[in-house]
Image 1 (cartoon, one colour):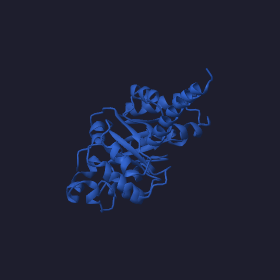
Image 2 (cartoon, helix red, strand yellow):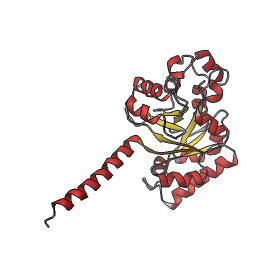
Image 3 (cartoon, rainbow, N blue to C red):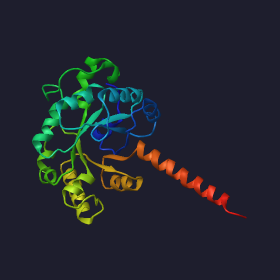
Length: 260
């Protein structure tokens, strides 16, 4: 397999940083492939992306060691297998609420005898010989379970015990909603739950990850022990950048239109 930054970072327990790639355009993918990140997250859960679009994005990103994480739409072996077959480094599986569900995700991402993944990688997307990929895939493919419900928190110890799980990702918005605090991720009671998840992961030496929206949030959680931290997205960065430009130009236009 081609060398990839995220699996190495997880093995060494080094914080890995990434951002979401949501614009389905290979020109954007090519622009992103040389950024100084460990991974990009392609979200097929909340973004209308086909498998064909995903494959084009992965291929455009592959010439470098930048890892590609795909958040699949559901804990479905077909969806997980397709994401990996087109060349993703790993998957984030949403709404994992039990050890059984975590085990199902791991099984879908590992070839026998460690799992039940069906054979069929795309050589073009995996960047080399398919048999070479198969020999190394079970040890390299990243499987992250997304903890984002009160039920998942209740079952966290059992989830963390699942063999082959690479780590967990906290879904802060959905978890805050599930806990009864709407989208109030900054609520002190919600923060306590986030920290308790982090502590239980550290106790078991299971990598803990967190979704963030701003560099300030990302910096905070990296400092709190997050080993897989996503921050913002290409769509959000475009919108913010254009808004800042608009504010600057609008101020200049208003200044110029004032009499005298």
